[in-house]
Structure formats: structure tokens, C-alpha cells
Length: 471
Ligand SMILES: Cc1ncc(COP(=O)(O)O)c(C=O)c1O
Image (tube, rainbow, N blue to C red; front, side, top):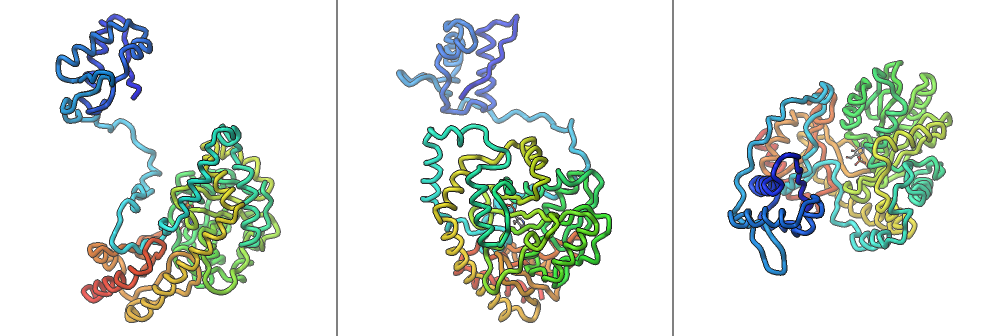
């Protein structure tokens, strides 16, 4: 541990070193058992004589703060700390009011319930850890300077190429590698799109019910989100205010309802954007997992005017922790997006980007998607079957053939059910968690990404008990 010691002019050097080390030990900034730097090294760093440092160490040793092990060094003695001093009140600075609208820090995945039906979490246990370790190790061999220094803000060239190829095949997105910007998850893709397309005060249409993080993000950027209702065909284009500059939608698998936007509605949305000179951000966060039928063409492929920015994520197909996603944008935004990206955080970690590029080139990615699709399909079928069989009195499933969650409308208020279920170890979201006005709709969102197949039936049996008690 590199301990910081600040030698002020006019004070005794030995006393000052002693005093600051003693304070660090008492406050546990230096922890019990931790090694102190050798006297020679600290003396050199502080430009003082070695005797000065030794004298400070000797005094701390004599007072019982340090112990010396011959040949090993000097260590903080156990039991020499005292409870941390009270921290400063921390009340001097306040965030700007806009942050009041952002709900709690998203710590919800720090909890590990017995039956985890929370939407948004994929199954991380099936990730090909050994392959990934090999791929990352290859990048860390040290001879690959281009991977280990600052990289292109728009992303690792190999990964941009692999993504363009992948979405060309699997989603019929016609994109060149230079159209692809690698991001830290889809949230950053949406952030960058908003930064280059919106001015403070601009109105942005968001789905209601919808995925809340982009809505809060738009607010923090000074834009004004407008919730627009969703029906069985998707976002109600006739309800979008004329002056919206951007529309954020999830047409492949509407979050949270799970429906696909109809072709007619897709065409209507593109025509609307063209008429109103607006942009569309198409969030395609989990469409790798489609279980029946052919997917409808993405807005990006239907659009001939260059108004659609397509967003994808590796959070659901691989791991949320990778924080990798991408944005496919029209050419006249490339430069602005690259600049915005470099100003935000320069670029995504290159080692992981390069490892992912190899994973995709080697075919590991496609194999993993296939394997997970089979796995999730079984869970999708199980949840659908049990909800239809055991909850028909209260719940009606919204038809959905893709993704990692299913939603059911409820005939009874769902908030009390969700709260009571939590107390029995069954965690799921209420549809009202995703409406602009909290609890405007009653329903339950059954995520099945995180729950193993064998736990679905017992988990839903517990939920049934909750309905019986509450009902
Ligand atoms: C609608 C929607 N978009 C995107 C994401 C993924 O976000 P990210 O790629 O930032 O992890 C999620 C995850 O829950 C989601 O539900």
C-alpha cells in the first residue's frame, strides 16, 4: 500500500511521519496485518534520511502499533485500530434537482432471492468461462500494444466488424463496420444518441409502460420525456406529440409487455419520423431469443431515410457485467458520436472488446446463443403453461414469443401481491413498476432469465399461495 504522507514545512519530520502513520492505523486506513513500506523506500520517497523514518517506526513499535518480523518487514499490529472516527457531515454539496427524479441506485441485483423471477437478469451460470479466460489471456500476452494502449473511441475494429456481420445475418441489419459504435451496454448507446441529437428542452417520446432507465436518462440530459401509450400493436404513433425530436422504442420485444410491434405500426412510425424530421432509437436488447415464428424486420431495415439508430446489447446474451453493447448509426452522425464517446469515457475496455471479437469470429458466440435459446425456450414454455393453468382466475398472459420475460395483466391490484410474494422469497416485478405514473396498470412481469427450470414450478406454487391469501 502506497501510504500518502504530507510533510509540511516547519514541523519536525520524524514527529510528522509518526503522527500521520499513527492516524492512518487508528482510522484503519492502514489495516491490521498490512505491511509498511521498508524504511529505506519511504525515506527515499519523502526525501528524508532513513534514520528519521526508522525513529518514527521505532516509536510506533514501542507504543504497540507496529510489529517487526525479521526478514519479512514491519506490519500494523492487530488490535491497534479504534472505531472509525465520525465522517464529516457531507451536507455541503447537493445534486441538482433533476437527480431527485431518478429512483434509487439500482442495487436490486445485490439480493439473491430463493425464486428469482426478476426481469432483466440473464442466466450467468451458463457463460463459457473457460473459453472466455483463454480469450482474455490471449489478449493480455503483452505483445499486442494496440490492445493495451488507448484505442479508437468508436470501438475495436475487429469487434465492429464481427458485430456488423452478426446483425447482418441474424437481424437483417445492413451495416458496415464503420456504422457500428461499440458502447458500454445499451444504456450508453442511448446516452450517446441523445447527446448528439437532443438539445435541452427537446421532447422525447418514450413507451408507457416502458423501460425506465432511458426515460430518466433523457431527463438528466435536460430533455423532456413524454410517455406515449402502447397497445397490442406497439407504440401508439397517433399519440406521439408532433414536436418530439426523438422516439425511443423496443419494437422486437416491447419492454415490459413482450409484444412485437406490428408491421403496419412500424411503417407508420417511420413515416411519422420522416414527416416530423425526428429520430428513432430502436432498442433491440434481447431479440436473439425468439422461440417461434419469424421476426419482423427491424425498423432499421425498413427505414430508407436514415432516421433509425439501432441499439443492441451483450448484457442478455452474454453477461451484464461485460457492459458491452453497440449502436448502429447513419453516417452523418459518426463523427459526432465518436467525439461524444471520447469525451464521455474515451472507449470501452479494449481487452474485452478484442476477446469478444475473437469469440464471435471463432463461432463461440453463435453456439452460446443457440444453447441459451434452447434453455430459455424451455423456461418460457414452463412459465406460460403454469400461468395459464394455475392463475387463469386472476391473470391473462400477454402473447409473447421472444425474450427473457413474460407479462400477465392482472384483474386484482398487483403491488400488494408482489410485496407479499417477496416476503416468501419470490421476487418479481409489478407491471406498475414500468408505467410513467406508478401502478397505472395492474400486472406481473415474470422474468425467467435468472431462475433455473427446476425452480419455476415451486416458485409459482408459492406465488399461487400468495394469491390465495391476498385474494
Ligand atoms: C429494454 C431494455 N433495454 C436494454 C437493456 C439492457 O441494458 P444494458 O445493455 O445497458 O445492460 C435492458 C435490460 O434489462 C432492457 O430491459
